[in-house]
Image (cartoon, rainbow, N blue to C red; front, side, top):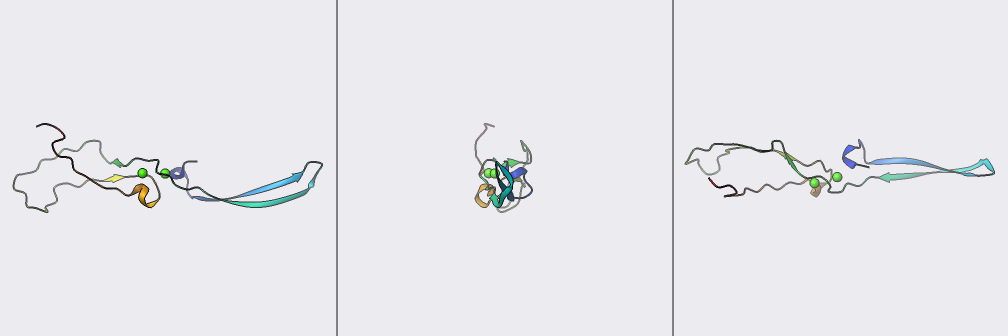
Length: 92
Ligand SMILES: [Ca+2]
Ligand SMILES: [Ca+2]
């Protein structure tokens, strides 16, 4: 089961046990199944690459670009994102 592909994470299954020689002698029970989320998805940016131009002397705190990334996992720390900026990753 893929938790992210399911509409809900809880299911009720009904079990039935029958006596082989007499199916009329039967019992039922219910099982509640919870599909727990695991951290199986990577964060993804909305674009594979961004290009930007910044004019010099931009004031500190000025917003120069916005990025968006998502993670399909469902539970708190599985989709919590932290953004970091690498410097000098490419030569100019
Ligand atoms: Ca994740
Ligand atoms: Ca998941």
